[in-house]
Amino acid sequence: MGQQVFQHTLSNGLVLLAERMEHVRSAAINFLVPAGCANDPDGQFGVGSVLADLITRGAGDRDSRELSLALDGLGVDRDESVGVYNMRFWGSTLARNVPAALTIYADVLRRPHLPADELEPVQSLAVQDIEALEDAPQAKVMLELRKRYYPPPLNKDRRGTIEDVEALTIGAVKVHHARLFRPNGTILSVAGNVEWERLKAQVEELFGDWKPGADPDLAPTERTPESGHIPKETAQTHIAIAYPSVPVTHPDYYAARAADGVLSGGMSARLFTEVREKRGLCYSVGVRHETFKDRGTIIGYAGTGADRAQQTLDVTMAELRKLKDGVSDDEILRVKAGLKSSLIMQEESTSSRAGSIASDWYHLGRVRSFDEVQAAIDGLTAGMVVDHLARFPVRGTTLVTIGPAPLTMPE
Image 1 (cartoon, rainbow, N blue to C red):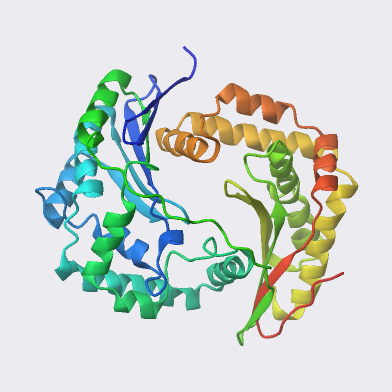
Image 2 (cartoon, helix red, strand yellow; image 1 turned 60 degrees about the vertical axis):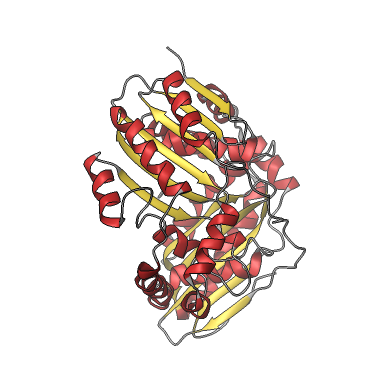
């Protein structure tokens, strides 16, 4: 039997997606709630991350320990995370435990306790997360790059600031939850050995009376990206770059993915070969494609010794700019093999499928079939990549560095 994907929109706007995978005995649950860090108000940066931790510390008729024991008793492997636009709640368990797990998650999303006596330890953990950046320069340089490259509110960091996190009150956290947790804009995706009609009926029962809320205005402002340098007396320099590409909604999306695959798709990719292997300039180098609904970006990183930092940047940028001059058929075959391998592995994972169908719906308003994605990959040619790079060359590159001395972007 072919791929089975179902969709239903509740009257309050909540979108339910399900992919039936009869060959497995497990299932994954994935909620995307429109409560990402782009919604953090001025003076409360980090409130979303605090809420994501606090929200699982008791819900419905269970206190914090009872809630953890209930999920553990169902064998739910779970996580909560905060993105730019969405807060994600994920859980994976045996398929037969999905109804019980969904009942618990309905309490977590709709009826959390948000206990005042748990706020201080949550704040302490959040502050430690921020402070840990000082010992993780690669993470910090990427954070600083996004702050300078993306316009508000896309450039907000989920961690927030120490000052804002420490000043949070339980009242502010509860207001944040009440304002943002709503069915309209929320996507629930389930993948695994589940029965669609039974699942749909339960979701209607659990979430059908959830009252819709207002859509916040998160339209990005106009702003010119700014390069910058963060001085740090260290033997290493961390280099981060960003320049415009196309979003997942664009016809050139797979050509853009192929281009970054030629540059960074494995140990035979150009950046690894030219920057690391041939010249021994750095221990880590690569680029990847990042997408929002309305914009795409190529994000790059290199970590190297301070004495070789400028040469590393020069060679890296030369390889990026040279790509438009030609791509070999062998490189395209390698990229296609990598993309197909990822697609096949995704097919076999309930967690990957639950995340993928939710991401598709969020970005595209539909779920792409395996056949559609495979056809797009099969159709890639060297000429398509070169044509894409002619339309979208490396331009307007933003550079952020951490190290003893700033670098100069080569012309």
